[in-house]
Image 1 (tube, rainbow, N blue to C red):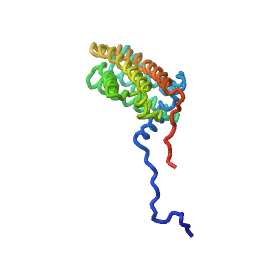
Image 2: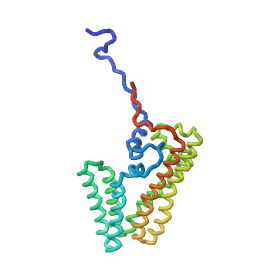
Image 3: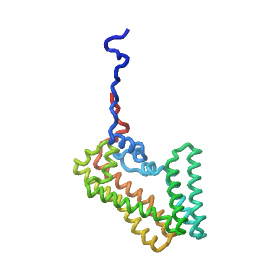
Image 4: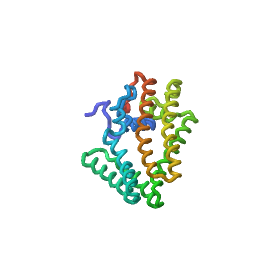
Length: 249
């Protein structure tokens, strides 16, 4: 026998509140590589290493480009020099599958390698293997500069979502200045890459392009990340990033 307080057949159950778009973005950020570290802690080598995927991530980042550099420098055989990095990328995917690790980083890397290799083969130009990277870096510069001009520094948006402080950080002058500076820091690596690689591309020096891509890739990324981490720690000295979305009771 039911009591007056019991739900009756046909009664509508209260719907749980849907998380907002900002909450969904925050959750996605916390599940990304950046969510693996606490921005309020002191920057450490271990923390930086975890963001790039550990030793495996370093190998996956460097190895295909290194293989192209070595093979093309020795053989000048474009098809072979492009095929071997693709084979390496496939091997990295298989290695992740065997060890039951996430495949997305290796697959996305393999797709990028395959697309640039296809462009290079279709145009019969080793230099065009690096053209997409130059264009992407130019695009990064454009996006980051626009974010500064409109008053929404890109790093502030990312950190605000990660720290569940979006868009509240825009009302804090100190935080906004720090995020402007951090966004400028992220512009610098892309400017360096374009400034170095574009003349080499125009001069058709693929070996130099391959070498400078390795040197200005992950090392500059790690340096920018380290400086950004220190800036964030200064403006969030005692805060803790929220790990999960707040669930309605």
